[in-house]
Length: 97
Length: 317
Image (cartoon, chains in turn red, orange):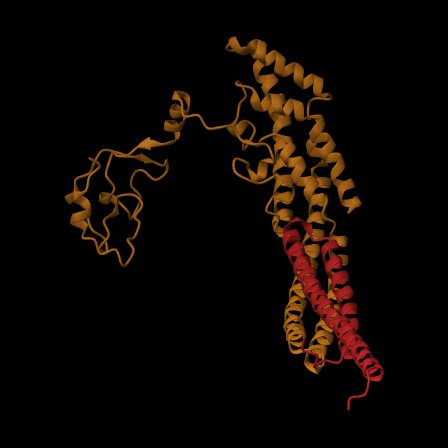
């Protein structure tokens, strides 16, 4: 796994984008609920659908960032645990001549 | 909106009250037409009711309110697009996520224009509908006096005249016939004038909304007339009766004209190009016309370089 990103920055970005996902979903719902008359109904629905799709796409970005941050954190924990284990083994093993 | 419909309601109620009489007159084989009643106008139908109902279901106030809400949505979308784009451009979340953010920001920006466009169209439709409904209500008020029973106080009296007309159908020269049909014709003529005005207003309002007539699920599709609602049409059967009716409308072409008699005008010789007597001719197109001695001329396309003689040599047989 490439760990070049700061998990904290990724999480902060994910949080910002998650709020925008909610706003996009709300905008899609607002468009969907607009009274358009029979002529513009299809156009309105398509527009709402596209906005909903954008919300989903953005949500996928958020999910990826959170997954990355979570994996990064687990990786870091594993590295720390491994280092401690190695250190303890070094302390307990007989000194080499 | 409710006030507009209230204004139309009495006219609709009267049309419905006298609809049975009108329908019987319309379907009566002995009914008169032409100068006696003016243009033939079909009775007020369920399809008319559906069209009016669909139109009445669109409130101009709601359309305008939706336009305002959509303006607010467009503003929100502009801000969302800006923030998403900024997050993507700022970096720190990985190349892939940054690229997706910039891409999505562009897409969302393009939706702003679409939402604004829809809001504008709704505003225009609301204004047009408001004006047309007002006109419809005015017409309904003016038409109110036209949809009473005329010489009949009650529909039952008109039905009685139709029944007497039925009984007197085989008695030519019946002195009561003229009086009976006169009263019925007057009733129908009054209602027909109202129907024409009402249908014209409804059609204009529907067109202003761009209503294709498919507002309800299942109201469009093969075998369904948009103007007649969701009921499917009967299968067309080409039998002798149908053929006879068809040939009352379509006529054979006149006898063949010698090719040499037809002058060529600007390289076009359409009248002679048509194989005479080989097919039907729509009424109104046969015969001569001032300045065009050979009927309607149809210019050839510029790239159709086929020699006239070659075309003339082809015949139906």
